[in-house]
Length: 438
Image (tube, rainbow, N blue to C red; front, side, top):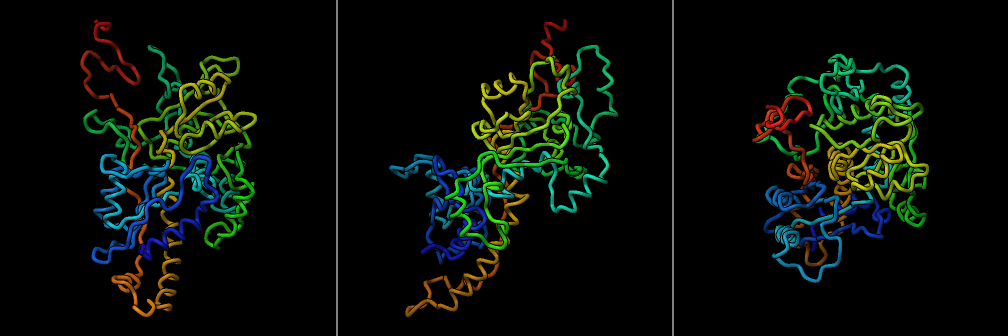
């Protein structure tokens, strides 16, 4: 039999993120690995959240005796003809099963639901609206903070040599503590932190007035199936074509400077050392400099969002996603649009600790309490409970944690203050060949 606690976690995930809302045309969601209950080595009533189920994350789950790994990305995408130790992913699954750890994947179901990953990524750009009253108050009374000042174009892309552009003055830059602006040497930190960085303590979350809509609504049959699983704690308003589906389109009441949006995103994700931005080749008939670029609409999709956001008509001014190919990004900039990417899983990981962790823990606590009561009332039949079941039913504890080892496979190499043979680093973005400098 499977662990009763694992059953409670699966029920909770299906309530919060109905499998019917996943894109079944390619996705493989649900319970991918159901480990047998091991009474002689009972796992804790705990869940480990991760974006990718890597070898490191599997070891983390085993070491901490978690019962379930909720891996956003499915570790099994296609049918398997065999499961052997030669394949690294299959080896992880076999080891997890041997240690009583089950694996559940929600993937695109998380993207589509109201308050899911798509809406969270919108909040990174616009600020989070907790209530109508809070939104009105924010729009009317919140002053612009230092973190809401836009980064100047010259600061983003570097001033021309010998230039003395006023926009490059210190007064126009976001005031960040010096401890956060010091660049480590190459050997100290070449990759982003394993866990997604939290907003800076001074992040100003004032909401930019806007509307948002679903790009591609979920099919009516999927909405109908999902609505049968609703609980008061998930989506009280129900799943509809206006709040459920793939991708989101933000429309600002007034155009916002691109540099302001970049600054807000940077502070919202904890001031990483950098992230890719694509803009039209300047100058254009419309924009003379980066500071002239203003954004009215933003297409948002976690992960690889290009195919989803192609459905936006007209195309949005800005695409905000995890990753895009060279040619996809080039097509956007050639039509005058802009692109911001965070690396694939870095556009997803923040949702785990900011939203999913608490939502899932609250739901599992309720389901587990109900499950324990029902099983105790029913008893174990004529032969009683199987070994270890009665013990686990006495354990009311529930814990949901986010992996400390999950990370995107790409990071940013910081070259400043690092010695590179044959090169001299003169300043921001200025790399000069030593032979040229002689």
